Image 1: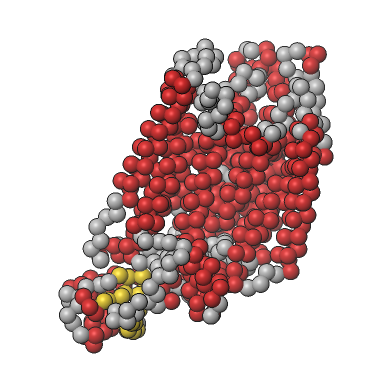
Image 2: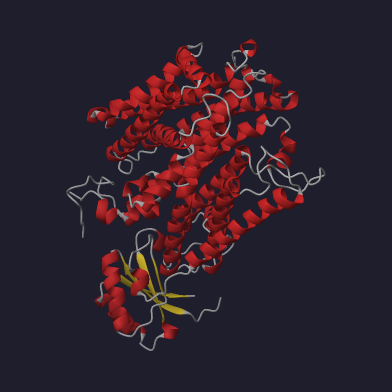
Length: 174
Length: 457
């Protein structure tokens, strides 16, 4: 990786201080690259101005695919390809098809959504993440600020971070 | 900045910080297993070995090795199947339904409970698979695959086929749900390994964590996925045991042909599942010194669920009897009189004592907050739930409409051996899980430290 990516990191250990810091830093016109946390912090996505995820839509579409596939499969197999009289019932009767339809809806919805999540989040087993600070999976929230996208100097950004409650200000170059 | 409610008991005691949580949970993955672990693992492998022997004999010679006869065609195998599937309900119930209800006490117990679910479902699936006799042809009988008979498709009207779809979907979705929860925790172990300079472990756990980084955007998506998985899993959990109960309820066998079965089976499944979770967690808590994470309060809450579901099961037993009398169908009435007072009376009354009477002891606060009493009662409940399935299956079958074909069921060594097989597998798998995976969801526990942890004194 090229070594001209320079980041300033603000280290926070309290999620409420972090939330205030995010809005303070943004008010100063500083662009935040990303915040890394050991656990989900509620309200952080809104504070950072992220759009709501559209994964629920993906889940719904995958679920509908499951529903349709299951119904088409059962109706075609038992209704047209090889109809059989079972208990004197109609070849195609919906009620007994519901359990399998439901299960396949859930299966495709769950698998499809998780796969979409993995793809959009760029998660792969063989990928090493850009590790800003190893403590971000332990007990610290790390606010990473990319110097290339900001006009302010490293010292000024550091001062803003300190001012908004960061415990430490470090820099990290990749 | 601690904001603790004085109304509710703390979920995490001992004034833990986030890094204490990482340390307490990851330590067990990083350290070498203790002697006790090796002993327990050894015993599980012995059980597994005996089970594999009996299973191989059954597969080689056919299911005539079992004690089944023409009258009793389902006995220990299906009893064990339903018992294990029932146990497998607690994990996803805890993580999905309690997530939707925002019950924070799930966070210390969901990981182990979900692991238990997955292993229990594998154990359950073993029995119908072996029961197919020629296991290697099972795919053609159980899945809608094109074949050389036409294609002669599987019968989608049959509850046995619904079972195939329900169990396999439940297994897959539970596995995905469990694994999603593990991803951030694998990253914790990876980063600790990097700091300790253990490169192999870092690489393995990085692969397991899919390169997790924990950015705010990923967490946002992650939470959305968890919520939807919970929403999908909730009806799924309920559907699985409903469909299992339909294996019986849609038949015309007196004693099976009852509409009460679906809710009654689901309540029974939750009942036995929580009992097994308690059995396992009380041991895990002791061995791994997790007293600050799995507190007496957690145990008490689980015991309350056992009272509720145990009482539902008790009411269902009584309702069944009442309806058999009220319905005025002689065959149905006979099936129930025979259940309670026929040759299998001991199984019926064991079930009644273990499932209906014993959980009522949890009304007493002293008993439901006592670890020893909870441990003993959790095992009694699971014995009772095994008898419940045995009573439903065997007593309904062994005296059918034709008295000349009445018969009894006696298990052989192979029936017992395959039950032992699942115990061996279950405990071996759980021990491996406890050694290599973090047994408590660290990310979730860290997120409630501020609101539900005991204040530092």
